[in-house]
Every structure is written in C-alpha cells, then in structure tokens.
Amino acid sequence: MRVDVSGWPQIGQRFAAARGDEARDAGQGEESADGGLDDRIGHVGIRVSLSEAGKARSDEAKKNQDIDESSLPDTVKQILKMIRKLKEDLREKMAELQSIATDQSLDEETRLRSMEGLQSEISSLNGAISQATASLMKAMRDAGLSGEQMLEAAQLLMK
Image 1 (tube, one colour):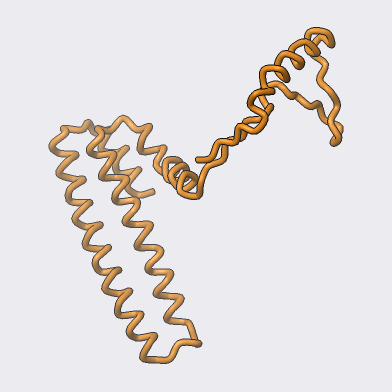
Image 2 (tube, rainbow, N blue to C red; image 1 turned 30 degrees about the vertical axis):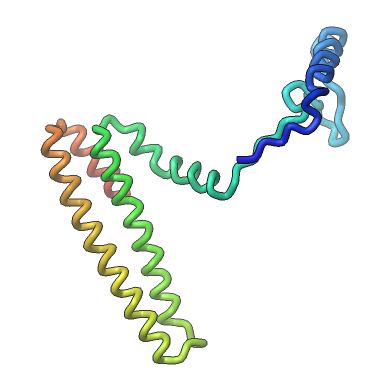
C-alpha cells in the first residue's frame, strides 16, 4: 500500500477555506471543468493506492466472502476456502495442459514432457482435493452441524 500525502501541511488551510466557502455559499460547490460539482473537502492531498499484492488479497477476500458470511464454524470455513483454492489451481493447470496440447510451436518431445509434468501436478491436486473433502466431512461431523448448516456447506462446496 502506498500513501501519498503531498500537500499535507496545506490540508488544514484548504479544509478551513472550503468550510468557509461552504458556509458562505450554503452548500454550493464549485463547478469543475467537466461540468460537475467539485467537492474539495476530503479530497485534499491524500491518495492511497494498493499494491498488486494488496489488490490480489482484496480480490481473494471477495471470492470467499460467502464462506466468511456463512453460519459455519471457522474450521469448516477454512477447509472450504482451501478446497476452493485447490479447485482454482486445478482449473488453471487443466487450461495450461490444454494450451500445451494444442501448441503447434512446440516440438513433440517438449510437448510430451510438459504434458507429463502437468498431468503429475493435476493428479496431485486431485489427491489434495480428495483429502481436503474428507477432512471437511470429518470436521462437519465433529462439529455436529445442523441439517441446515450441512446444506449450506454443501452449497458452498459446489461453488
């Protein structure tokens, strides 16, 4: 995350001036170049931007928001998130395998070696998904989930 505080010392002065103008103009903002009103209060000198890693974490959190908002125990939520991640990784590897299989620019030997490596990774991911699903079932039994919670977990698992 990067925070830009250019003009920081002037913020107090700008804010005071903007508040004075606001009081004098009874809420009338200045017209900006694009024809809209320019609300300068709150927009003076501070800009926050997220790094790519920060954006990725934000996107990841949004993807699992439905799991986080569920009524399930935390252990079940964590396993569901792990299964989602494994399924996403599996889809990526399958797409990569398909891409290599149809790539005419690769010689046959290179293509076969690449495909064998990807098939091994895909097999490992499938095994991990199976193990995580078994762990999910055990965690759900151990937690004594209600029928409604079991249904909720199943629906989240299918997404």
